[in-house]
Image 1 (cartoon, one colour):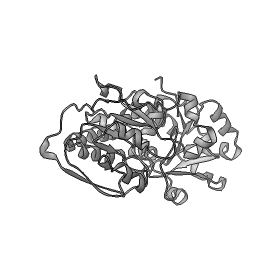
Image 2: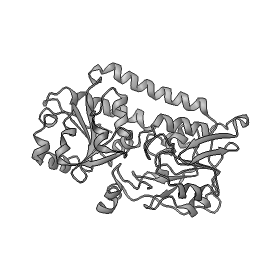
Image 3: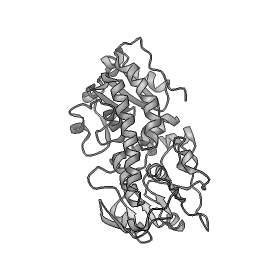
Image 4: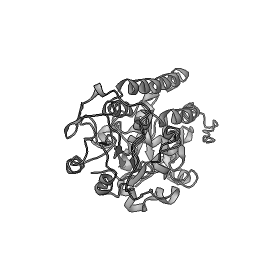
Length: 356
């Protein structure tokens, strides 16, 4: 199933809330494909000797015969990995945020003087094949995606497609793998590894500065259909574990083979961790609603002030859900101070919202 999501929430939210983030940030920016679209703009062309390259994925293997010049990103966050490697896509897929070209503020400087990519929105039925074809891509990247075999085969008729890896759930690819696979597809393996190493070093520095994070239990949730909790293969959860925190030991037994699920009230204990990170549409109304729920309000995570709330429609909230090689440094600078304030267990310590 192609994952139609807004604000990092399940597809059902779109139907139930009529694309709730569209009302908060503006709808996805679908634009007609230009008759003569500009090519992707690589900062440095990959050496011809690198190609052809072959990449394994969920539906088999894809061979890229030559350095691509026109890249379209079907994966909802794949544009960040491509931009980080010095290539501006001809087109991107809107997830949420409403940014021009689906390029967040943490990645905007990577555009340089290149045209803003054409944005096509996932309408819930998968990629808009005809409009993608009109952009004449010579490579389609669908790493952070839920591409189906049928969609893969259709897109492959007019360009090589690098689909999501089989080792992870759909939308479960770690940002490191996303970056490295994008690097391989673009003939920029060394550059991709250097990017990953730099972000890993930033995580390591944060862990060293905050030894109290080591082994502390944590969970990421959102107030959808009660309590929606994200599993270990969700990128947001991986951000916490990369900082040294741990997830509940039985989390995936409850989540199952998916990125997250609404848990029963009988399993609301999953929320009572050393720290609970909530993404919410409204930092006032939704927090008040959660704290009026007696089952949740009586937990020590609440009474001891060990909650972090992130406004999902803010730039920070979108970056927190993107979890890419470009968005993570932006997130770490904002999330770490919040976690440190929450994890001390002192209700008097206020968990401040980032100023920008």
